[in-house]
Length: 305
Image (cartoon, rainbow, N blue to C red):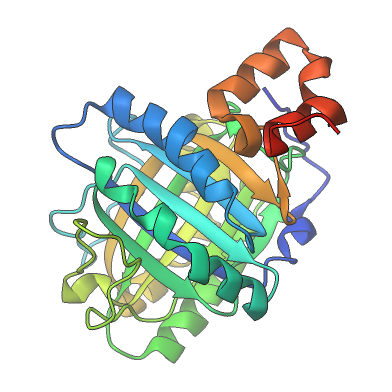
Protein backbone atom coordinates (compact mmCIF):
# COMPACT_ATOMS: atom_id res chain seq x y z
CA UNK A 1 0.00 0.00 0.00
CA UNK A 2 1.16 3.50 -0.83
CA UNK A 3 1.54 5.90 2.08
CA UNK A 4 -0.11 9.28 1.84
CA UNK A 5 2.08 12.33 2.22
CA UNK A 6 0.32 15.00 4.25
CA UNK A 7 2.65 17.76 3.04
CA UNK A 8 3.48 17.04 -0.61
CA UNK A 9 0.92 17.83 -3.29
CA UNK A 10 1.34 15.96 -6.58
CA UNK A 11 -1.62 17.55 -8.39
CA UNK A 12 0.53 19.18 -11.10
CA UNK A 13 1.47 15.81 -12.62
CA UNK A 14 -2.02 15.48 -14.15
CA UNK A 15 -1.80 18.73 -16.14
CA UNK A 16 -0.38 17.02 -19.24
CA UNK A 17 -3.80 15.45 -19.94
CA UNK A 18 -5.33 18.32 -21.88
CA UNK A 19 -8.34 16.43 -23.29
CA UNK A 20 -10.23 13.89 -21.23
CA UNK A 21 -13.41 11.83 -20.97
CA UNK A 22 -15.19 10.35 -17.98
CA UNK A 23 -17.21 7.24 -18.74
CA UNK A 24 -19.72 5.67 -16.37
CA UNK A 25 -20.03 1.89 -16.60
CA UNK A 26 -22.71 -0.57 -15.52
CA UNK A 27 -22.07 -4.30 -15.76
CA UNK A 28 -24.39 -6.68 -17.52
CA UNK A 29 -26.88 -8.02 -14.95
CA UNK A 30 -26.16 -11.72 -15.56
CA UNK A 31 -22.39 -11.37 -15.43
CA UNK A 32 -21.20 -12.10 -11.86
CA UNK A 33 -19.37 -9.16 -10.35
CA UNK A 34 -16.09 -11.02 -9.83
CA UNK A 35 -16.10 -12.16 -13.48
CA UNK A 36 -16.95 -8.64 -14.63
CA UNK A 37 -14.20 -7.02 -12.54
CA UNK A 38 -11.57 -9.55 -13.64
CA UNK A 39 -12.47 -9.23 -17.32
CA UNK A 40 -12.50 -5.44 -17.15
CA UNK A 41 -9.11 -5.31 -15.41
CA UNK A 42 -7.23 -8.06 -17.20
CA UNK A 43 -8.84 -8.46 -20.63
CA UNK A 44 -10.50 -5.18 -21.59
CA UNK A 45 -7.92 -3.00 -19.82
CA UNK A 46 -4.82 -4.19 -21.70
CA UNK A 47 -6.76 -4.11 -24.98
CA UNK A 48 -7.63 -0.44 -24.49
CA UNK A 49 -4.09 0.35 -23.35
CA UNK A 50 -2.54 -0.78 -26.62
CA UNK A 51 -4.53 1.59 -28.84
CA UNK A 52 -2.30 4.36 -30.17
CA UNK A 53 -2.88 7.94 -29.11
CA UNK A 54 -3.69 7.32 -25.47
CA UNK A 55 -1.92 9.40 -22.86
CA UNK A 56 -4.03 8.44 -19.83
CA UNK A 57 -6.21 5.46 -19.00
CA UNK A 58 -7.50 4.79 -15.48
CA UNK A 59 -10.26 2.45 -14.29
CA UNK A 60 -12.03 3.29 -11.02
CA UNK A 61 -13.96 0.28 -9.74
CA UNK A 62 -16.93 0.96 -7.46
CA UNK A 63 -18.18 -0.96 -4.45
CA UNK A 64 -21.96 -0.96 -4.14
CA UNK A 65 -21.89 -2.15 -0.53
CA UNK A 66 -19.24 -0.11 1.29
CA UNK A 67 -21.41 2.02 3.60
CA UNK A 68 -24.57 4.12 3.73
CA UNK A 69 -23.01 7.51 4.48
CA UNK A 70 -20.82 8.29 1.51
CA UNK A 71 -22.25 11.79 1.02
CA UNK A 72 -24.53 13.80 3.30
CA UNK A 73 -28.23 14.05 2.52
CA UNK A 74 -29.17 17.69 1.94
CA UNK A 75 -32.76 18.88 1.90
CA UNK A 76 -33.85 19.70 -1.64
CA UNK A 77 -31.13 17.59 -3.31
CA UNK A 78 -32.33 14.14 -4.37
CA UNK A 79 -30.43 11.04 -5.32
CA UNK A 80 -30.37 10.30 -9.03
CA UNK A 81 -33.25 7.85 -9.60
CA UNK A 82 -32.41 4.32 -10.77
CA UNK A 83 -28.70 5.03 -10.76
CA UNK A 84 -26.31 2.18 -10.01
CA UNK A 85 -22.77 2.05 -11.36
CA UNK A 86 -19.86 -0.34 -11.25
CA UNK A 87 -17.16 2.10 -12.23
CA UNK A 88 -15.90 5.28 -13.80
CA UNK A 89 -13.18 5.47 -16.47
CA UNK A 90 -10.87 8.23 -17.54
CA UNK A 91 -9.44 8.17 -21.07
CA UNK A 92 -7.25 11.17 -21.79
CA UNK A 93 -5.02 12.64 -24.48
CA UNK A 94 -2.11 15.05 -24.74
CA UNK A 95 -3.47 16.62 -27.95
CA UNK A 96 -6.41 16.66 -30.34
CA UNK A 97 -4.27 14.86 -32.94
CA UNK A 98 -3.62 12.01 -30.49
CA UNK A 99 -7.34 11.78 -29.74
CA UNK A 100 -8.06 11.50 -33.46
CA UNK A 101 -5.56 8.64 -33.79
CA UNK A 102 -7.27 6.82 -30.92
CA UNK A 103 -10.77 7.43 -32.27
CA UNK A 104 -9.82 6.05 -35.68
CA UNK A 105 -8.75 2.75 -34.10
CA UNK A 106 -11.22 2.53 -31.22
CA UNK A 107 -13.80 0.26 -32.86
CA UNK A 108 -11.71 -2.73 -31.79
CA UNK A 109 -12.14 -1.57 -28.19
CA UNK A 110 -15.82 -0.70 -28.34
CA UNK A 111 -16.68 -4.08 -29.90
CA UNK A 112 -15.53 -5.64 -26.60
CA UNK A 113 -17.80 -3.60 -24.32
CA UNK A 114 -20.86 -5.78 -24.93
CA UNK A 115 -19.13 -8.69 -23.19
CA UNK A 116 -19.41 -7.13 -19.74
CA UNK A 117 -21.14 -3.74 -19.91
CA UNK A 118 -24.90 -3.17 -20.00
CA UNK A 119 -24.49 0.60 -20.22
CA UNK A 120 -21.63 3.03 -20.76
CA UNK A 121 -21.87 6.81 -21.06
CA UNK A 122 -18.83 8.82 -22.14
CA UNK A 123 -18.95 12.43 -20.96
CA UNK A 124 -16.63 14.64 -23.01
CA UNK A 125 -14.11 16.92 -21.32
CA UNK A 126 -12.50 18.78 -24.25
CA UNK A 127 -10.70 21.10 -21.83
CA UNK A 128 -9.59 18.25 -19.60
CA UNK A 129 -10.25 17.63 -15.92
CA UNK A 130 -8.64 19.40 -12.99
CA UNK A 131 -6.78 17.90 -10.04
CA UNK A 132 -6.89 20.49 -7.25
CA UNK A 133 -4.98 18.44 -4.68
CA UNK A 134 -3.44 14.96 -4.59
CA UNK A 135 -1.24 13.86 -1.71
CA UNK A 136 -0.80 10.26 -2.86
CA UNK A 137 2.78 9.78 -4.11
CA UNK A 138 2.03 6.82 -6.40
CA UNK A 139 1.38 8.14 -9.93
CA UNK A 140 0.17 4.76 -11.23
CA UNK A 141 -1.98 3.08 -8.54
CA UNK A 142 -3.01 -0.49 -9.28
CA UNK A 143 -5.44 -1.61 -6.59
CA UNK A 144 -6.77 -0.48 -3.24
CA UNK A 145 -4.23 1.74 -1.51
CA UNK A 146 -6.21 1.99 1.73
CA UNK A 147 -7.35 5.57 1.14
CA UNK A 148 -11.09 6.28 1.50
CA UNK A 149 -12.07 7.35 -2.03
CA UNK A 150 -15.48 8.28 -3.42
CA UNK A 151 -16.83 9.69 -6.68
CA UNK A 152 -19.74 12.09 -6.25
CA UNK A 153 -21.98 12.65 -9.28
CA UNK A 154 -23.85 15.94 -9.10
CA UNK A 155 -26.69 16.99 -11.40
CA UNK A 156 -27.31 20.65 -12.21
CA UNK A 157 -30.40 22.39 -10.85
CA UNK A 158 -30.91 24.17 -14.18
CA UNK A 159 -29.74 24.23 -17.78
CA UNK A 160 -27.14 26.99 -17.40
CA UNK A 161 -23.90 25.08 -17.85
CA UNK A 162 -21.73 28.17 -17.29
CA UNK A 163 -23.34 29.00 -13.93
CA UNK A 164 -23.22 25.38 -12.82
CA UNK A 165 -19.57 25.11 -13.80
CA UNK A 166 -18.67 28.31 -11.98
CA UNK A 167 -20.35 27.10 -8.80
CA UNK A 168 -18.77 23.65 -9.02
CA UNK A 169 -15.32 25.18 -9.51
CA UNK A 170 -15.66 27.33 -6.40
CA UNK A 171 -17.17 24.45 -4.45
CA UNK A 172 -14.30 22.14 -5.40
CA UNK A 173 -11.71 24.79 -4.54
CA UNK A 174 -13.27 25.32 -1.11
CA UNK A 175 -13.21 21.59 -0.32
CA UNK A 176 -9.69 21.07 -1.69
CA UNK A 177 -8.34 23.78 0.61
CA UNK A 178 -9.23 21.73 3.70
CA UNK A 179 -6.44 19.59 5.23
CA UNK A 180 -8.72 16.55 5.65
CA UNK A 181 -9.11 16.27 1.87
CA UNK A 182 -6.24 14.17 0.50
CA UNK A 183 -7.35 14.27 -3.13
CA UNK A 184 -9.88 16.22 -5.13
CA UNK A 185 -10.25 15.93 -8.89
CA UNK A 186 -13.05 17.77 -10.67
CA UNK A 187 -14.67 16.72 -13.94
CA UNK A 188 -16.92 19.31 -15.61
CA UNK A 189 -17.99 17.67 -18.87
CA UNK A 190 -20.01 19.11 -21.69
CA UNK A 191 -23.75 18.42 -21.52
CA UNK A 192 -24.43 14.94 -22.83
CA UNK A 193 -26.47 14.71 -26.03
CA UNK A 194 -28.54 11.55 -26.57
CA UNK A 195 -28.62 12.39 -30.28
CA UNK A 196 -24.90 11.57 -30.37
CA UNK A 197 -24.54 8.55 -28.05
CA UNK A 198 -21.04 7.85 -26.83
CA UNK A 199 -19.05 5.73 -26.86
CA UNK A 200 -20.29 4.07 -30.06
CA UNK A 201 -20.21 0.53 -28.64
CA UNK A 202 -22.68 -1.93 -30.20
CA UNK A 203 -25.32 -3.65 -28.06
CA UNK A 204 -24.62 -1.36 -25.10
CA UNK A 205 -26.98 1.32 -23.77
CA UNK A 206 -25.67 4.89 -24.03
CA UNK A 207 -28.80 6.95 -23.31
CA UNK A 208 -29.26 9.13 -20.23
CA UNK A 209 -32.37 10.67 -18.65
CA UNK A 210 -32.61 14.49 -18.58
CA UNK A 211 -31.31 14.80 -15.01
CA UNK A 212 -28.02 13.16 -16.01
CA UNK A 213 -27.36 15.35 -19.05
CA UNK A 214 -25.56 18.20 -17.26
CA UNK A 215 -23.45 16.81 -14.43
CA UNK A 216 -20.21 17.27 -12.56
CA UNK A 217 -18.11 14.54 -10.98
CA UNK A 218 -16.01 15.16 -7.88
CA UNK A 219 -13.38 12.58 -6.96
CA UNK A 220 -12.60 13.14 -3.30
CA UNK A 221 -10.45 11.14 -0.89
CA UNK A 222 -9.91 11.04 2.86
CA UNK A 223 -7.64 9.09 5.15
CA UNK A 224 -10.53 6.96 6.50
CA UNK A 225 -14.34 6.82 6.41
CA UNK A 226 -14.31 8.29 9.92
CA UNK A 227 -12.35 11.28 8.63
CA UNK A 228 -14.87 11.68 5.82
CA UNK A 229 -17.85 11.61 8.15
CA UNK A 230 -16.23 14.13 10.48
CA UNK A 231 -15.44 16.41 7.54
CA UNK A 232 -19.10 16.66 6.58
CA UNK A 233 -19.79 18.13 10.03
CA UNK A 234 -17.16 20.85 9.76
CA UNK A 235 -17.95 24.51 9.38
CA UNK A 236 -16.08 24.55 6.07
CA UNK A 237 -18.41 21.96 4.51
CA UNK A 238 -21.58 23.29 6.10
CA UNK A 239 -20.79 26.74 4.67
CA UNK A 240 -21.28 25.27 1.17
CA UNK A 241 -24.76 23.86 1.78
CA UNK A 242 -26.78 26.90 0.68
CA UNK A 243 -24.81 27.07 -2.54
CA UNK A 244 -25.33 23.37 -3.13
CA UNK A 245 -29.08 23.79 -2.70
CA UNK A 246 -29.11 26.62 -5.24
CA UNK A 247 -27.09 24.89 -7.95
CA UNK A 248 -27.42 21.11 -7.44
CA UNK A 249 -30.61 19.09 -7.91
CA UNK A 250 -29.22 15.54 -7.70
CA UNK A 251 -26.33 13.87 -5.93
CA UNK A 252 -25.20 10.23 -5.83
CA UNK A 253 -21.92 8.99 -4.39
CA UNK A 254 -20.02 5.81 -5.24
CA UNK A 255 -17.32 4.16 -3.14
CA UNK A 256 -14.10 3.29 -4.95
CA UNK A 257 -12.83 -0.23 -4.32
CA UNK A 258 -9.72 0.12 -6.47
CA UNK A 259 -7.91 2.43 -8.88
CA UNK A 260 -6.12 0.79 -11.82
CA UNK A 261 -3.75 2.77 -14.04
CA UNK A 262 -2.90 1.39 -17.48
CA UNK A 263 -1.41 4.39 -19.30
CA UNK A 264 0.18 7.56 -17.94
CA UNK A 265 2.06 10.20 -19.94
CA UNK A 266 1.62 8.14 -23.13
CA UNK A 267 3.47 5.21 -21.50
CA UNK A 268 2.10 1.76 -20.72
CA UNK A 269 2.28 0.78 -17.06
CA UNK A 270 3.00 -2.83 -16.17
CA UNK A 271 -0.76 -3.24 -15.66
CA UNK A 272 -1.32 -1.92 -19.17
CA UNK A 273 1.28 -4.25 -20.61
CA UNK A 274 0.55 -7.41 -18.64
CA UNK A 275 -2.86 -6.98 -16.96
CA UNK A 276 -3.68 -5.60 -13.54
CA UNK A 277 -3.45 -8.81 -11.53
CA UNK A 278 -0.24 -9.92 -13.24
CA UNK A 279 1.27 -6.55 -12.37
CA UNK A 280 0.24 -7.00 -8.74
CA UNK A 281 1.93 -10.42 -8.63
CA UNK A 282 5.11 -9.03 -10.18
CA UNK A 283 5.25 -6.28 -7.57
CA UNK A 284 4.38 -8.59 -4.68
CA UNK A 285 7.18 -11.03 -5.52
CA UNK A 286 9.68 -8.32 -6.43
CA UNK A 287 10.12 -9.91 -9.86
CA UNK A 288 12.42 -7.24 -11.30
CA UNK A 289 13.25 -9.39 -14.32
CA UNK A 290 9.61 -9.09 -15.42
CA UNK A 291 9.94 -5.32 -15.84
CA UNK A 292 13.35 -5.39 -17.57
CA UNK A 293 13.53 -3.92 -21.05
CA UNK A 294 14.11 -7.25 -22.80
CA UNK A 295 11.03 -8.84 -21.21
CA UNK A 296 8.85 -5.80 -21.89
CA UNK A 297 10.03 -5.72 -25.53
CA UNK A 298 9.24 -9.41 -25.87
CA UNK A 299 5.72 -8.91 -24.55
CA UNK A 300 5.15 -5.89 -26.78
CA UNK A 301 6.58 -7.27 -30.03
CA UNK A 302 6.63 -11.05 -29.68
CA UNK A 303 10.35 -11.20 -30.36
CA UNK A 304 13.64 -10.54 -28.58
CA UNK A 305 15.56 -7.53 -29.85
